[in-house]
Image 1 (cartoon, rainbow, N blue to C red):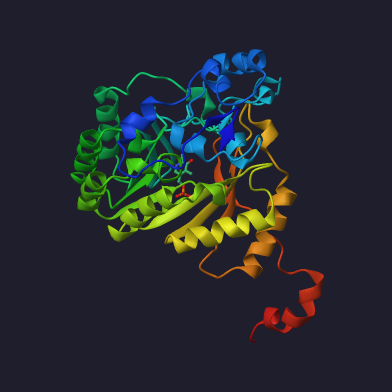
Image 2 (cartoon, rainbow, N blue to C red; image 1 turned 45 degrees about the vertical axis):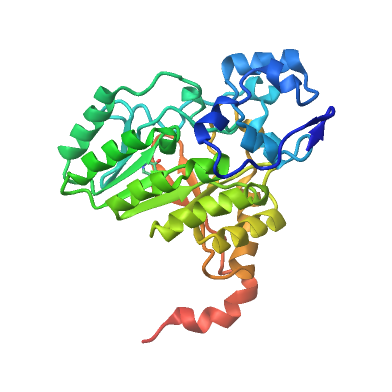
Length: 352
Ligand SMILES: *Cc1c(COP(=O)(O)O)cnc(C)c1O
């Protein structure tokens, strides 16, 4: 796109070094002003509370002011309008037996191994941790590993953060090696937005490391069809070709994807990349993100259409994470509506 006569480059070359791209991220309102006309004073108030990071690749996806990519990346004054929400409504900190490890369900833990992200999503559900720049110490990671080692009920570890793929290859290899040495861990899952936010991160070298530790699943995070570029598609192809089952956790976001046509296009594009849509998340009630939240009714209407109009391969659950740390539950549209009840009433009676 061209803004104020400055050209933002087209999606960056796949072979460009991801760290170099990341190093050129926009992190200040001064830098942002060079590209867009924004209310700088107001946005400075936002970024002192919730920092900004937009890497040049993600920036290049913005087509016009206030589009779906813009809304996810550019700070908005509504983030600091007073809302009554908590910074941690899901009680993640309280459910952390050791720092950086959330143990909510008996059999699986969320292990926050990275503080870094390739971009700072404005709707982030861990906004409370946003921008903490210190590296997570190896002692913390070791404490997490010890907890997992000492708890035989845990059969699955989900690496999350931040974005685990923002760690260096050697660190990822180190963590995966330690996890695989624990006999009761069957599944390793990686939650990462990198295929969408910085696909250049998915190098051949990284994929060669990950595939040595199978079964490794990856759930990625695309929210809009405009995020599915050729570069992103190549990244996903590399992962799928390495035998890594891919899922996608999309967040339902007002003004981004809260309409059937957009969601449908996104889902179909994901399937073509061999990504199974896994969850569509109702946006959490996290402080500073209220302007992104739709009603549950809106979500159910979209889900209703998707369920009838799209291939059965595309069957994401519409999930809400209950405040208070009670976990996720699926929100389901009613199927036994009046118009169907006659047709199925025979089936419902069952055999006698
Ligand atoms: C979402 C979540 C998980 C994973 O849940 P799945 O339904 O298996 O994807 C695990 N732990 C915590 C704390 C979570 O929030």
